[in-house]
Structure formats: structure tokens, C-alpha cells
Image (cartoon, rainbow, N blue to C red; front, side, top):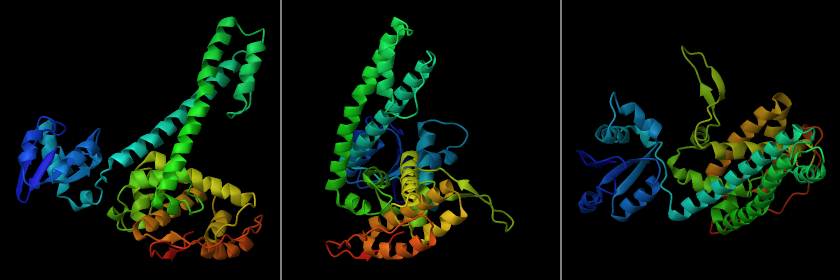
Length: 357
């Protein structure tokens, strides 16, 4: 933890806020820098309650100022140094409220259960193959596979017992995930910003909730492109001597949110291919020139920019106007069929409308 007050800078233990609490409580309003780590959002809220201005710094932007050795005093001095740099000030971590932390816990718990269910399905399928029982990929064939194993006389009793143990856990995860899905949808419906973000075609409850919780303070980004760059959806820059060299995406920022945006874009492109929705002129031309995976990343980048605009301006996504533009795209992209245009959404509380993709 680092404290600054005008020209005066003093250092305290980086994460020893509990032992330094009495010292901090006696200070007047002071700017305090914390390295974003475990419990940093809690301590930031506690320090804000004392009247201090608190900023959270990403650890990767503090490390370059640490120097040769490392201890609490050097770490605090490095935080003070990083706080004074304009480039670092643009990358402060937004402080989450207790409600936002709870919502992030909901997203993380759901994601963990989904990973565990996938892991179990692969484990069951892999072990079953060792006994000559092969099943297609996916979650649906797992239960029939377990039933086949239970009656197969060639499978040893010990293996059947272990398969039953794995099957019980696999079966229990379904209702748990369903309950969390209901809670996530309820959170998305209860938040006005989440509802507005959900009007964008490629954004569902998971992406909308993740953006509200994880981005936190969209006004910290000067443009939608900076927000997309923070998510790692912009290309790497290896330019030198006037030669522009751009590589793949940087993959910086939050991996879960970036993956969700790309997955939403991929699902939308699949619907376009099946003729269930009409692409915008921009997406129609992109799909003619580029592979689908590259187009999905580009669409995710554009979705992030649209979401940033909605979050910072208070505007709504105008589906009617977007559908009018997408009508031209349908004529340019083979295989798509017309779909009825929805009624335009009206912006509440004096908000204006905007067109997205």
C-alpha cells in the first residue's frame, strides 16, 4: 500500500493494511494506491469509507518500478512511482462494490461448475473407451453410456463402482448449474444496464452481466477501441521503421469475458450461416473475405465497442434501425433469409437511441 498527499509520499506494508489501520484512520483525506490482489477491493471500500481516495493498480504495471530487490518498502515505493505515470493512470482497476463482488462470484462459481461438468464427461468417456465402450462427444450421450456400463458384464465390478461415483457427481451438477443460470438471469433482468446490453444481438445474459461486473467503470476508457484493447481483442503491434506489422490479438485483459464475447460472436455467425438471421453489410462483406474464426473475433471487437458506447452514453441499441441496415447485408450474403423486424425500443429516462453493428 502506498500513500500520497500532495508532495509527501510515505510507505506502509503493501498488504499489511490491518496492522496499519490505526495509522491510516488518523490521516486526513489522502490518495492511497493498492496493488490489485486478493482482498484489495474490500480494503479499498474500507479506506474509501474513511474519506480517502483509493486507486487499484494492476500488478504487471507496478512490477517494472520495483527494481533489483523486493520487500514491502520497495513495493510501496514502486506503487507510488507507478501512480504518477500517465500511462498507468489509464489502467487503474475499477473498485467493485460488495454487490458487484457477489455477482462476480456468481459468474465464477457457474464457470467453475461448467468446467467441472466438462471435465467429468471427458473423464467418463476416456475411461469407458478403455473397456471398449465408445460414445460421441457432448453431454447428452454420457447418461446412456453410464447405463450401458452398469449392465455390461465385461466391465469389472471395481470399474462399475468408480463409474457410478463419477456419474453421481455428473448428475448432481446439472441442477446446480440450472439454479445458477436462474440467478444469473434474475440479476440480468434486475439491472437496467444489463438489460440495455442484452438488446445487442451477440450479447446474452452471461456477457451482459460479465461486462457490467468486470468492466466496472467504462468511463475510464477514452474510446471503445481502448476498451476492446483492454479485453485483448486488438492485434499485436510489431511496427518499426515505418513498416506496419500487426499480428494476432493480444489476449490481454479478462480471459473469461473475452472468450464469452468471441463465443457469442461465433454463435451469431452460425445463425447467419443457417439463414436464421440477417447479417449487417459489414459482417456480410467480412464473411466473404475472411475465415469464420477471424470474423468472429472482429465481430467480438465491434461488440465490445458497441457495449462501451451503450455503457458510457446511456443510449439504447436501436434494433429497428439496425435491421434496416442489415436488410442490405442479407442481399449481399448468400444463404440468408429475411426475418421479421422487431419493433423499435424506446429509450427510457430521456436516453437517446443508437445503432450498433
